[in-house]
Amino acid sequence: MYFGSQTVRQIVHDWRTGMWQPDKSFPGKDNITLLFLGKDVDLDNHARVLKTNGRTDTILLVRLDFKDQTANILSIPRDTRVRIPGYRGKHKINAAHAFGGPELCMETIENFLDIKPEEYIVVDYKSFEKAIDALGGLQVAVDKQMDYDDNWGNLHIHLKPGTQVLDGREALGFVRFRKSNDGHSVTDQQRIARQHQFLMAAKGKIMSKSVFLHLPELIDTLRSGVNSSMSDAQLMTVAKFIKTLPKESIRTAILPNNDSVYVTAKDSDARKLVNQMF
Image (cartoon, rainbow, N blue to C red; front, side, top):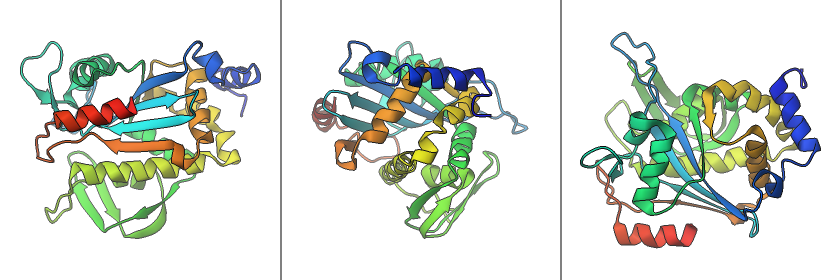
């Protein structure tokens, strides 16, 4: 089974020929800037999935420095107001993907922050759930009672506080939770902080040898729900590089903003942080 598909055979061949090394997968580059997007789906009046680009619920700008052995991860709140090339006025940044896919997202980020992403990875929710299930679940510390039901969006979150192993559906609820059934909401900064916590837990799981050896199978399984400008060898290189980094070499941050319902980035604070990280 491990060598059963062409994708897995190619990934294993790339590993044997050293293509999982940064100097082979990204020749001539000491660092690379990636845009990672987690996207939603659009539904019609009968709750059927429409064939649209979907909006991005998670937006991460990632800089990997192969020479200095560091990773900087900047989360951009999905409600941040920006100018999207080709569209009048200002829009929430999560609309860029809906308007024009990952390419327009990259162009919007470049215009907004003067940082040009070189590659992108887009993951849909179903693939996210499959990935966590394929990893055997993920242990995280749930900080509070989470109860939220959205029948239209088919999102049902019911988590109790405490350290526990979450399956794919539960993990998706953990990173998406913004509002409880009683109307109490959390800020996007709190939700993003939870996503950062989840990323570090995922990194810890991937570091285990038994899991890492099965990443080629995982990529093969998820390929239909992952859209990336990178080859499988490059994806494996990124995974392997992050796997080897100690926790202190990974910096996570949230783009400073005014913390309102319709977010506007704090220009001076945002510029300072972006200059430091990228």
